[in-house]
Length: 147
Image (cartoon, rainbow, N blue to C red; front, side):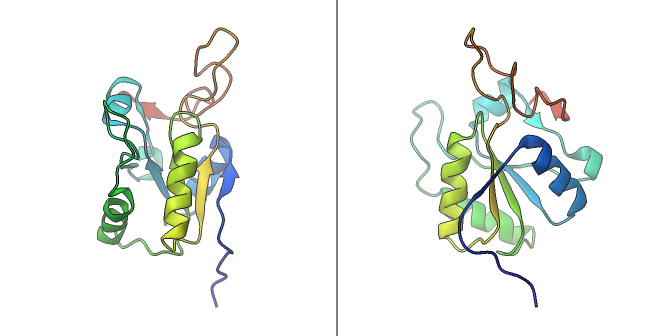
């Protein structure tokens, strides 16, 4: 019998997320940033493990409103790929805030293994208010491509 974890979102580092994605062919990475971020900042590249990142905006650009249909759009995209509610799903944004909210929303929708990539794609601001200097997917040297 498969173990079902109790509801709640686990925070993981980018390196832990990569290790789990690499070791579990069913695990999924969902990037919840905006289209502008994907285009101008880049996106994680999972081609080395023969997978794609799912790109689903949590907030719309340029008005930054939370997408009211986020859960429905992601559920439909997951179902289209045959992804079950017991699959481990990693959520990533710029620095861990939006991805936490998205992971919480999907946990509430019945997905049992939602993970927040707490450092995000660009990580926190450094002392000079720059990102990708002290943490995040890009800083950690993980594969990414310009959108």
